[in-house]
Length: 474
Image 1: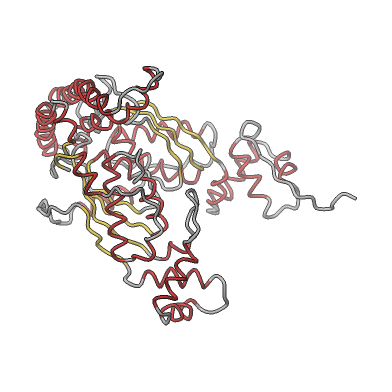
Image 2 (image 1 turned 90 degrees about the vertical axis):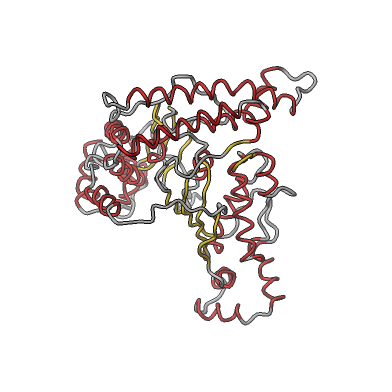
């Protein structure tokens, strides 16, 4: 006899149903005993729009909008604009890689603010010079890499090129300015997208505002109700203006240390272990915490092994590791930050992109004989940045190349630290971000050695060796 309540798992396909209808179908299951298919069959686009107008917009049941998912393609937007596009935590992105692709000589954006201004000519010339220096560096640096990574027997030219491309393009990309054009794909639900549109429409750069208008227009073709009220948000605009009016320390720190662990919980190990035990008992968290603190070191060490031991290469640590966190003040080149910003489970507070912290110089530029050209291009870009910054600092950031340093505040829990440090320390990661990942892991191990001991980092590399191998100045 057939089961009265058979288990079923199936897709509501976007090719069969509009995103707003799918969202309503899921929303109605909270009040309707009908199956999802039956609910969907009763809906039209008009009825779905009416539902969203009443419940999502009118009553503020915004979580319903999370079931409407869109895939957006952005083409020929600046890498500076991509920072805002990718600043949304609850979305997924894939972008044109500076590691595996090469940029055309004229592949940069000229901002609307600068067109027709006295700075248009010097801006365009600076970007042109940076792209020319980038193009000119590719072959000399490639030749050095070829000498280190010889072609294998029976390996085709194309396969060899694919194997070494990231090694030399990784270095030459230090010259690419933030105005470089790129493509990025974004997948987001309508709730997250509405907030993203609000941020873009409230942004100080005209390019980002234009992109926000295009995103809203494209999204409304699929979710006409859920994003139609997304608009410029006075709070976002005014709060930034108010905060900028406060006096702040404008001096550039002279400290040679580029990473500082600013804050952590000295009792973070106890917090994590207590959380792990708490789930398996009935006592209070405070009581379990006292239990852990009363353990002798050997017993706590065994508990750590039970929590972290046995992880395979692709296993993700348990969520109990989220009960302790770390705050870092980090200085990194802009290219490294572009890798870091993808880790959106972190809380990241970047300072504005400037030329004031100087620039990093890869070792390979000297070995390839192009170091003088690199320095000339970077110094010229820094000079033009300062001229533009005196006029409009937000716009000036477009001319800053990847090699210039940027200061970022990072807050991440231990579970995210495992993910970041393991992924970004891998041998195929960019050397700038590998250096950061190894250093962060070391700082965490210094304060929580038992908890961080399970990080699966490639040996015997460490950040000092990476710095010595790849940088003249990091």
